[in-house]
Image (cartoon, rainbow, N blue to C red; front, side):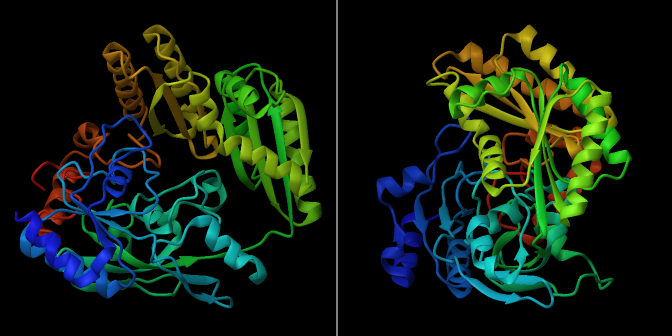
Length: 458
């Protein structure tokens, strides 16, 4: 590896858009979670697919790692340069290329953020609904197969990426998929790259599925005495066919944190936060049906509203829950982890996790997208106390073991990165080795985001 020669060659192509300034390196070495800083050797800011191909080609010749960077909101160390190399920052590739209203699709560059896309779509009557809770870039969301609060109705990024343009490890430009809604033509290469976390190539263009803006929206909040009551209400609501757009759980600790942070006055007990989409009559009927089911399970304080201001306040509170939880212990860092289990096992998984955290002495408010069996724990630690971090990591590991024993997965939406590598063999068995074979075939020199997702050496 000849790092300085590679950087000099890249600077001759991109000029000042290849930088080694300390502020840029520091920014691209940080994580939203507990991982130590790992800055790259340089940061490149391409503006076209051809420039991305140039960057990868130069790095391939010099054996230099390439790490894609969207907005840096990933939680398992996916975008950190643990092996050094070039961080490819897509913030300047942020154009909406084509809105096909009749086809209900859109072509975007990877640096377009979720909020920016929906702002661009406002006049079209269309929306892109996948909402991971952060204003993440769409390229990053596809790379990590992001999900979020609306997955129970609209699915994850896996369900909403129709086609891609990708720069491969050899610097070639590849197109996968089409604008058609289905295909039985060959391997699903689009599906292969979605969720690959930059280990197979860099996405430079995405074709996404859009949806009509709902005619009416209602949001609701409801408290319960126990998590089990709340989860059973969710199960009954799904089984009764009530078409929820969002359904979120916040446990007592999460509610306490958001009350303090956002000056809310929710009763300090588990709550469900919901949203319904449809016609005015339809959302009223849906909310009333849910209210009746919640009452059967001891729900209280059920309140629903259609005013935009009230709905915005509710979901702003939910999206800020992570920062509210951090503020509950000033100076703490978070070990943020998630699992996903069959919904019939959700109450057991949450209650067992809560008991384990209590026994381990680890503060860990729980919240999650319970409509699809997914929940998160935000484990708060004092970085200066190694014992706290050890206990938190142990609790996170037991969460995963619990999920796998219940027929679930190590992560519902955070992805693998480096944080969950240790669980891949148990979850996938020989399938994980096959992932390594695919990686070796498409990236034989191992330059694309090395050390992440696949077996070591893959």
